[in-house]
Length: 124
Image (cartoon, rainbow, N blue to C red; front, side, top):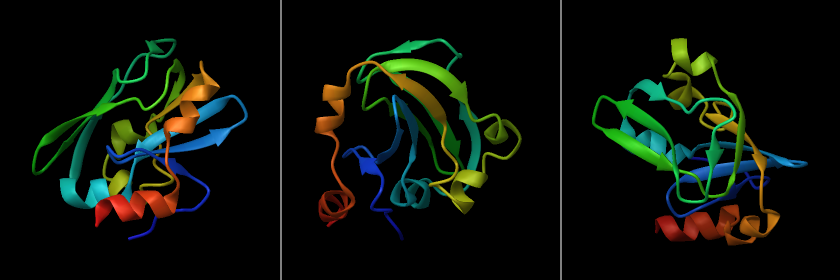
């Protein structure tokens, strides 16, 4: 499994890629492995306002459905429409298969995220 150094993570297996005032959110390699074959991804509406801790997606797999909670606050500016037709893309490349892109509301919340080394230590 891989955990790219340029990403930030939370303990609930969400990765965050920050690009300026935007953040891409997805699930980690560990999470997709534990879920098994992903069959469907329910995503929020564009322009939906998310507060830290709000549900931002539901990922349904061959094993179970998992609710994903946003590690930061922001406005949904884009959803990954590719996942509508190819939800299994998360299994194939979890770090390219982002789920939502949000406009960051409070940059201070980014301080609560952990780096790759800390995330991997949490898994042990």
